[in-house]
Structure formats: structure tokens, C-alpha cells
Image (cartoon, rainbow, N blue to C red; front, side, top):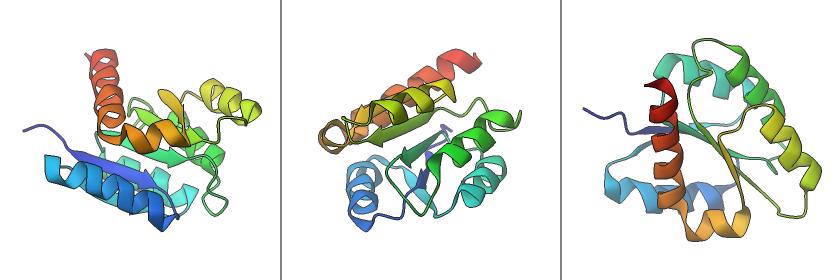
Amino acid sequence: MDNKTILVGVNDVFFYTKLRDALKPHGYTLEKARTHGEVADKAVALHPAAVVLNLNDEGLDTFKALEALKGDARSKSIPVLAFANHEEVDNWKRAQQLGVTKIVSRNEFSSRTLQLVQEVMQTGRAHSA
């Protein structure tokens, strides 16, 4: 059975709802994490198919979450999809340096949620194969 658990690091109810509405009908299970520590702990405990992070989430500290995910052998192979405001070039670069699998603008994330999650899951499988 394919793992269809997606760990969502997000405090923004709008984006969580958008993810849920895009993924649940396709059999995905969403697990919410509200802090960088929760992201790291749940990633190790659940080994989700992918992690979705909102780089603009002030309450989460996404960069600490990414450092924790990519710095732990038990979770570093989990693909990470991140989204941010497209004008925040420094955040995009920093996320890429920390090992994010794919980063997109908020608009692209909103319009292609399901496809983007499936893309990073494919990427993750290819890397771990």
C-alpha cells in the first residue's frame, strides 16, 4: 500500500483547508504540525510520503523545520514541498540550500496543489530507489 500521509507544517487555516480539499478526495491523509519541533517529531514518527511547508508561516519557523528534517537521517529522504511569496528571493534560496525538494509561489501552490504534491512524492521515490 502506498503511503499517502502528508505532513503539513501550517498554521494558516485557509491553506490547510485548500490542501485538505485538494488531497482528501484522492485518498491522502493530512497530519498537521504547528511548530518546527512538531514537524521534526511527526516526520520521524510517521515517515510521511511528503511534507508541505508554508515559508511565510511566522508561527512555524519553517527554516528550523527544514534544518531538523534534513539534518536527521530518519527524515532527510522525505520530499518537501514549500511555498512562499514569489518576491521573497532570499527565502527561496535559503530553502533550496536547506534541501527543499520543490518550492513554488503561493499562487502556483493554490492552483496546482494536488499535482505539486504528487510531483514531489515521485521525486522522493526516485531519490530513495
